[in-house]
Image 1 (cartoon, one colour):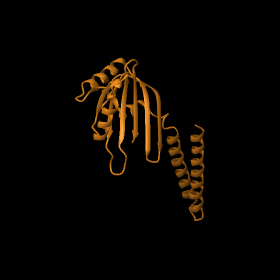
Image 2: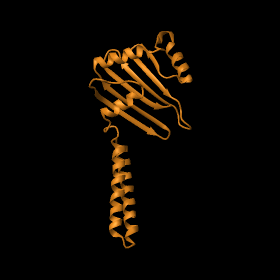
Image 3: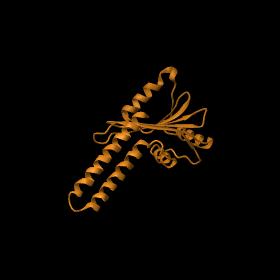
Image 4: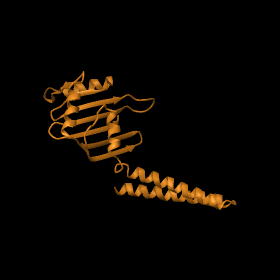
Length: 188
């Protein structure tokens, strides 16, 4: 958290310096009002971008959740609560996960949807089924993969890479005991 605040302060300092330069350059000419307007506009834009980047996880809303879940063909009809939301990105890598408290009805609808899928598979960790099934489907990039594990039901999509970008994997896990939905999205 300290690193994020430090990065935010550095970005704000750079934005202030750029705003000062944009203010000073036109001021050399006979346009001081234009210089002030440009400096204020650049400062506002850079501060807004900084705030949005730093507080991205806090600004994640229920509308955003619904939008993300439609990518994996999961629709929530009842009210839900966002318990946790985290995202991380670095050069070429992206990781986003959130945990929801959903209604019993939504949980059952999603489980029924997963179970009724054409290629639904019950995985048995004791026989080593899990790794073989997931690896074969990951190579083929079949979407979606629907399966049942010991403690959860899972729907998994692999979005093939576009041009030079890595493939995106999206996973929805429904806990068998609790009314919780875990969403994971990352680049491979």
